[in-house]
Amino acid sequence: MSTYPVRVEARLEEPLNRGLWIVKWLLAIPHYIVLGFLWIAFGVLTVIAFFAILFTGCYPRTLFDFNVGVLRWTWRVAYYSYGALGTDRYPPFTLGPAPGYPATLDVDYPERLSRGLVLVKWWLLAIPHYLVVGLFTSGSLISWRDDLPDGGGVLYTLDWGGLIGLLVLIAALALLFTGRYPHGVHDLVVGMNRWALRVAAYATLMTDAYPPFRLEQGGHELPRLQAPPAPARPAARYGAACVVALVSGALLAFGGIAAAAAGTGTALLGQSRDAEGFIGAGAQRITASTYALTGEEVSIAGQGVSILRQSVGRVRIEASGSSTPVFLGIARQGDVTAYLRGVAHERVRHLTFPADSAGREVYPGAAPRAPSAQTFWAASGVAALTWDVQPGQWSVVVMNADGTPGVSADLRVSATLPGLAAATTGLLVAASFLLLGGGALVLLGVRLAATSVPEPAPTVAAER
Image 1 (cartoon, helix red, strand yellow):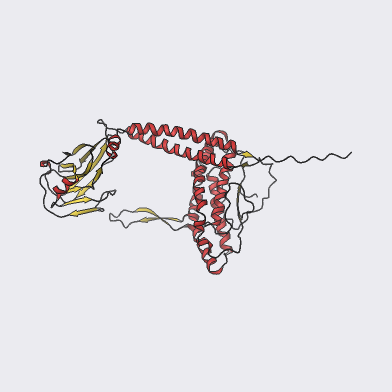
Image 2 (cartoon, helix red, strand yellow):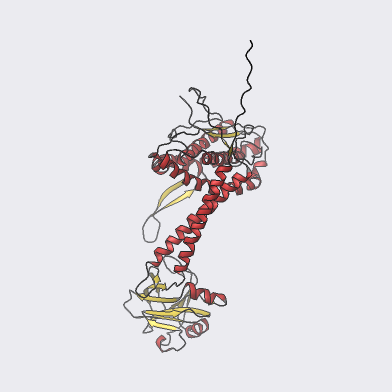
């Protein structure tokens, strides 16, 4: 038997400081910041590796070494902080190996990878392991809720920190009160982290070997009982310029992907225009037991007027699904306040989805004057209105056209969005530049990753 190609080891360094773990979250912040950028680069480079494996069957060595370095760095920080609390030695800021550090991670480089497995192993084949690792790391419990007013049940999750977090908390308390880290707890914590890191390497395409379903406790891997491997290609050496190029390129590529997705979304949105050029959201059911329903004040001033006119354009509000004709009106806030003073109405303080009575203020009063007879409306109509954006403080009023109480209708808001085409073009152009720039920087980082060439062994002249 041979060990799994992902080797995770750790050495408990004693004695440990009783109280240092309380502030390790603060001390590890620089690492968390750097790892945030590195993991974005990790994700983008894994996507690039996916296509490389799909078409060539090989994981580009420079990208492989970089991503292994991110996993290695992550394990060192986790072992120092709340993934294990197994050492007080501050983690080094390096992607490369740190043999003297008590937490190490190595992954054997695969010369060939299956072009078919790359399509399914990271999601379908890894699902059983995701369930186990989720229990180790997040501890999310799924339950059925049946205490809703309508009697329906929904699934919800309860996150209690996972087995690793629970065991590390026990170890921290033991350390605080006794000054000792329980060795059995340490072995179990390292075993769970080993399982999680093996799954991470498998899911991110670094190996085709399926992770074993066994909890190998303890700080050291099983000894390797296989024939000595062939001499390995020297691993890439990552200087500061190389890391900056790879991370910057990956961030630009990530931004390019996001811009491309947004541009595609706006292009699809533009295809949903109706015959009059309006684009709208789905209808929202609104109800009020009083005579009128009004929304919060909308203030439009300064540059906001031109921006809204260019981006939103004309606004249309439609009401349907009511047995009684519905009056819709937009007017300045002062006029609406004066009109509804002494009238029983409801004011929406904030929108909720689906709409209900939450977030509303109810004002008692008498019946209103006929809404259609008022002259202060900037735009009004029965069942529909269209309004051109104007500066000022505005409010929308919905009520029955005959002035009776009990408003109920499906409201749909739409707009012309004249700036949508320009936004789509800008996003797609930006995506092109970001992807090209990001790809160029990634290629530059690959070229800058110089390999360490072993010095030739000295030759000894044969004795005559």
